[in-house]
Length: 235
Image (tube, rainbow, N blue to C red; front, side):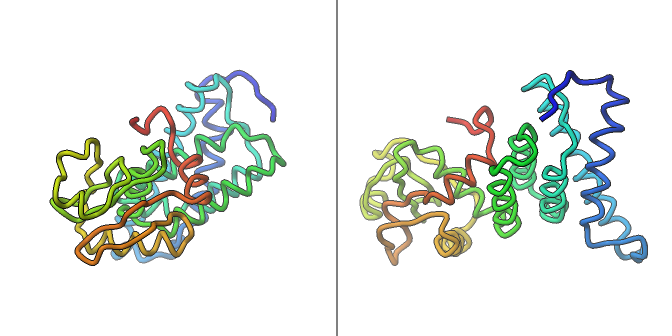
């Protein structure tokens, strides 16, 4: 990869920013013939979200590596693959996952086999809504990779491998946990979906509300590695 110092902002924007924005916007569902009255405001919001995110990618890569993001077909393909999900990412935590994927992928040299990983991660992100991403983020904070997910007294991911019954009977004695802001039926459904996607696994399910010995599978660990910046992941 041609790693050269950043040019002046105007020159830089003309090379990377404009090219990437054009690539992303071409992937969005509304074309030039869209009905302005129906789709105009929505399209403008989505375009702005894409542009803002690519701005952040450019600035973050500059801050981290001191180099320009060089234009490559692989990066263009990744931006295009991510564009629709990114444009529709109303929740900030969802948008951040696409942003972090692009930041992490940007320094890859053309032809690197890791580009295939990034495209797979983009495909997965396009299928996962905010509750699923919240679960993956919470599980990733447990270095032992064995957690307990419970419905009571609130929806929580405990950083401990205990039975759901223990978590229900003595919740405050179990130490650290991450609260999930979504309702239990939504979280429970996403636990099943993420399991079917081979992103996570669990040893048992409690009908009263919980999953025991929950862990990220290799595919889930790969997604977290590409779509979450270590310096912004909390613990």
